[in-house]
Image (cartoon, rainbow, N blue to C red; front, top):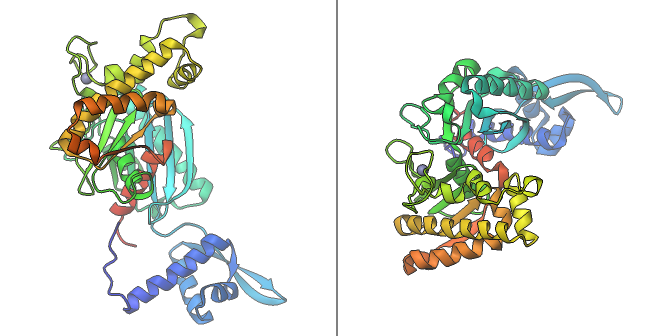
Length: 389
Ligand SMILES: [Zn+2]
């Protein structure tokens, strides 16, 4: 995602490529002697010796004197990837930190159950602790991190970094997570909406690989979308684009947390779905996974709730299909476990409310990256933001 501005074939490009060969060999082979590195990369022993000296000076590798076949040798170990980046995923009940390489690939992660919505400043302190725990475990010097991206479940105004007024974590409204994280981590941090990051990751490595016009919809407590137009995230003037949970569908419906009535979220969000079920003590599903399992087992109330959720989703997607004409809609979130019980009513309802020309070009698929999508999107964004090493 970042362009290396070096003329191919120039000395600098050659040095960079040779160094990368040594790093790649150490990454896949673990600790290797300099002689093994020379054999493995095809570089001369003198070149390997030079590269290892530079990598050691940069703190990328450690070198230890040893012996191999009775001769003195130098064993080289990769201690941190060059140009490493960090991603943080804030969800209402979990905090995850991941270390990625300069291309945004996941190298390692740490995750804890956490009530993220309760108090944003405390969640930020906990997230910083989690990053430091991860880096200590990997023996990566915190000063070498090039960039950090935080995924948050709400709209982010890119001009101010502020979380929008309506999110599934109300105490985060008006909070500036990137600013708070950056002050503690002393690294450039950007915050981005989780559905936007999911769209980015699915487009790069998941179900939407190769697509330029796609909409990723995440269905959980809230309902949000990442809209990609011409290969770029469409954010709108203040970062609110994609808040499809607040498309009004039923003027006599329930009042939504946004203050309007009958929003898509009141027909599809997990809290609302569970609230629709008859309350029968322990037999009542307590979460979406239990609701989906009961529907699969043939419970009529649960089947009804899933089918109506699908119909509502289809109506919301119809609005998006007519407006953005995507080639692919990617669906993510726990409710997708319902499979055809959800998708069949989605398709039926789409047919009733979508222009034929928009519908005929549009596929609907399940996300390929599951719960990892936001974290992976955050690593990709951080890698793109990192200065060249
Ligand atoms: Zn609403």
